[in-house]
Amino acid sequence: SAVISQKPSRDICQRGTSLTIQCQVDSQVTMMFWYRQQPGQSLTLIATANQGSEATYESGFVIDKFPISRPNLTFSTLTVSNMSPEDSSIYLCSVAYRTAYEQYFGPGTRLTVT
Amino acid sequence: SQKIEQNSEALNIQEGKTATLTCNYTNYSPAYLQWYRQDPGRGPVFLLLIRENEKEKRKERLKVTFDTTLKQSLFHITASQPADSATYLCALAFGNEKLTFGTGTRLTIIP
Image 1 (cartoon, rainbow over the protein chains, first blue to last red):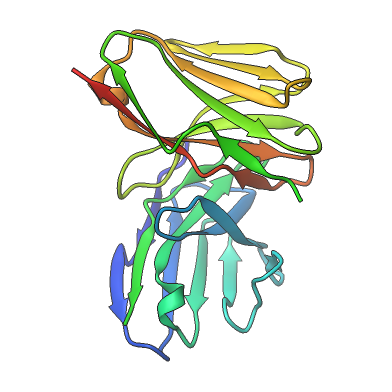
Image 2: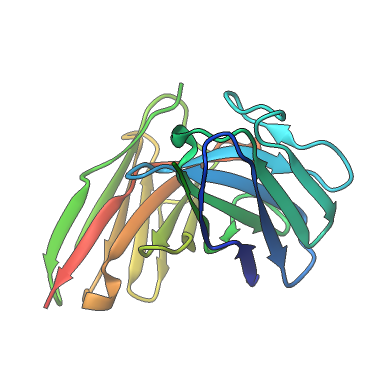
C-alpha cells in the first residue's frame, strides 16, 4: 500500500480566495484521483489527475473552479478557486496502482470557507 | 443513474456479536464491489473487493457476499470488537475505472 500525505490538513479561508491542496505519494502510482466529502455525505469524485495532460473532470465539476496539476507520478495539486461557503468540505486524494478498483486515500484536507 | 443505499446510517452491536451491514444498488450490476472503513478525520481504508462472478470473500474476521440477483452486498464482521467502530462505505465500479460510493453506515460496537 501507499503512504499518502496531504497539505494542508485543514484551513479556514475567506470567501472569494483560492486554496491549493497538495498530495504527495511515497511511490510512483498509475492513477491519482481527487474527491470531495461534504459533511455527512459520501465521497464524490471531482476528477482524475492525469500525468502530463489535463485532468478528466466529472459532471458538475469544471477546470476553472478546480484546476488540477500532476507534474509527475508521485505528486498532484487541487486548487479550489473563488471559494464560497458551499465549498466547505473535506477534500481527499487517492491513488491506485494497476487498477482504480483498489484505491488508497490520503488523510484529507478539511476546508472551511467563511 | 445508479443509486447506492447502505442499510442504515448507524448500527449499534454488542461486542462479540456479528455485525452485518447492507449495501443495495439499482440498475446495472458493477464489475466490482468494495468495502472501505473510514475513521473520523481520516481517509477511507480499503478492506475487501469482490467481483461480480464471486459469491463470497473472506479476510480474517471480515466476510463479504455479493448477490447480483438481489443487487445486494452484505458485509459481516464476526466477533466484533470496540476497535471495529467506524463508518463503513461500500463502493461500486462499473468498468470505467471509477468508483461510486455509498453514504456509509456508522457502526458502534458496545463493550
